[in-house]
Length: 496
Ligand code: NAD
Image (tube, rainbow, N blue to C red; front, side, top):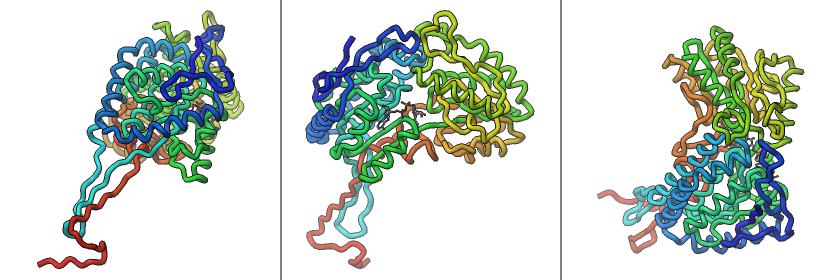
């Protein structure tokens, strides 16, 4: 099956006529589809289309724009199962999770549609008589949206629905590992009635499509989710050109388990946090920090459950853990396992590619646990982005929090405790954009801000009302109805 770019309301191939293949990571013999390998000439065309469409779209009243977003949510809901199955085929995570990924897109559609009738500004008293003061949100223009493969529906919807409801137009460059989900999403927007040119889709690589999109002078904003390495390059370009840029980057998330915690619950949470999406979540639990009093008990309970996880094709409902997304990802995970062993951590589960039975032709990797990990080891510091979790030990709450904060990243975090004082101290002192109490490091809801501190981003948030600050500019408006020149800060108004 061959798929195309979407430019000015038409499905078109790359100008070069080149294509790339997308294969199922659970069975590399299965070709999911062929997609255009686009270049800067395709980006130019998409940006021109988005720029022309922006002129009209910005003038459509926001509640009307929101009606289209709401319809897109309804269509996503209707197509949920088909989208989830295709997503599992193209990136591997289990069906339960690809359904959840699609549901997040649906939830975001309804939430963003609601903003069409809010998008509140402020009115404020003016300091001079017969003068009115207010602030309003205004769209920015053509937005370049660059997304990763691990949440191929949720992340694009977090960005694109708010961008559109705010009155912007979009050129969307999805990850080349998940182009099919991007096509399905854009089909939904077109079916919902979005005018031609308001959404444009250009497939291809980071250097082939991402770079020209970032460098295009008519693209006024870049919203990027991906690795910190690429995020830094993008930020430095946007810094030089003063282009607005929002970055959602890597994580090295930790779950603390205190000695008073419900251990069953904490084990359950750690399993889901570490091995859900095969560990390929920006919010994955990559470190478990255990109070020394419960460490041995927790670890033996945890390892027993890890040993029972079933690997396989995510379309099989009995499977817990799907494959990694591609060969390079598996090689990277294995190289980190070798680093962990060399640095002296104790491998207590996994540590190998998994090639049993039906898994011979997929990028599977055994769920892997390292014990006796020291805080400065590379496996405790660097994002691995796979099913590898490091166990560290703490003597008390403040040590545990100190270990958790000993990271250049600050996305998600979790503490399991039944002590309300410990919970609130952790909420106050943990350096992260998200903290869960008695829940794993994954599970964000779409109406709260999502993002992180430190090297996880550049201070913006997606989801919730905070995302409006990414996709709008503030305009302050003063209306003087006195009929004379009034000078702020200079005229002295007499009070009689
Ligand atoms: P990646 O940085 O390799 O790629 C992300 C996107 O950027 C892809 O579409 C890619 O084609 C594009 N790209 C790559 N190089 C580029 C360049 N030089 N210029 C422009 N675009 C370029 O990341 P990935 O492997 O797709 O995703 C995994 C990373 O994403 C992890 O680090 C993970 O933590 C992060 N992530 C973060 C969040 C978050 O919200 N904080 C969410 C999901 C994933």
